[in-house]
Image 1 (cartoon, one colour):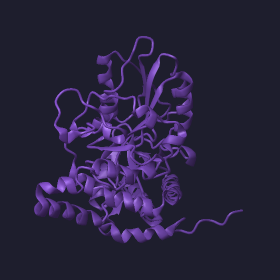
Image 2 (spheres, rainbow, N blue to C red; image 1 turned 180 degrees about the horizontal axis):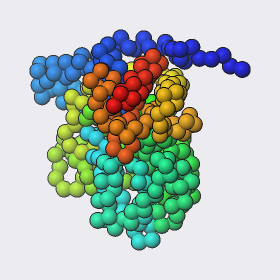
Image 3 (cartoon, rainbow, N blue to C red; image 1 turned 180 degrees about the vertical axis):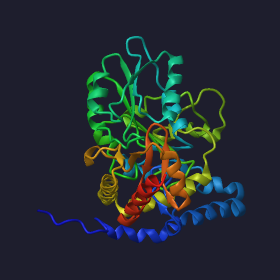
Image 4 (cartoon, one colour; image 1 turned 90 degrees about the vertical axis):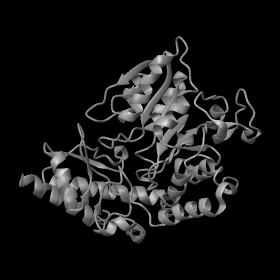
Length: 391
């Protein structure tokens, strides 16, 4: 029989990173599934951007700014399980998704776009627009907030052009078996696009090995990269065949020739870029990427499973309803709890410096990260229970 884990849990050495995350000194920060804590080094990076603009002016473009969308993508690539030169940074997931979708058509007999009712609304809004191009949207219902791979697989057939789903569902933190969905897509000749926003930075990803074709995500959550740094990835052989209609001069093979007429598209990640990149955001996201990589994604996942299990155990002890999978293989990096007065309780917790969020139809979401402690998880649930009883 294995010895019980110490109160601090596995990989307590990761707590050394707390010193680099100022907000942890003033709050119980359990909202990393919504906005990761800001590394102290972000201020230095933004200062470097400002100094370059102030002192180098227009020369800064040729001294690093222009290459940032792909160079920053290379920092992210190992966390996605893909190669260098394959990740294109974008402002957000809506734009990243629109770029990829603009390269696809829906021919007769192969016009179905399969997704689920459990996707983040932002994704569904973009997918709905594909109806104008002739796509038939097939929306798979969830099963009590879960999305078994078999349910998606059953909706995929020879008429399916594209399958779009999240790796981890935002509401209940259910982890979809991406490799199994990818296998079914290959069998049916369909493309598979995976939204990894709720999983990247919280667990190991192997997009290439799983057989995923396309992926989108962002840096706001477990990557601790802040807003404005979304990304997309396309399997290299597929990427070279894609011609996005949503494009811009950064995607041209020779942009400074200022040639008129049709674009002569660059290769690799460059072909998915558009116009002027968001240079400040591409500076700000780098410390978070480096922190996650240095901490080690396998260690992060083990610690995440310990902390989410701790939250579930504490919720059980107080009789709170858990809406997140108990099976660690199916659980993402957050825990959702239902309470009929959840919206008010979230505000009450926030007033005490305990930060979580509440989503209608889902519940109270707690997203610990590798730098959180077991004691913070216990404290948050204890106060939630006490506030609920006093209502």
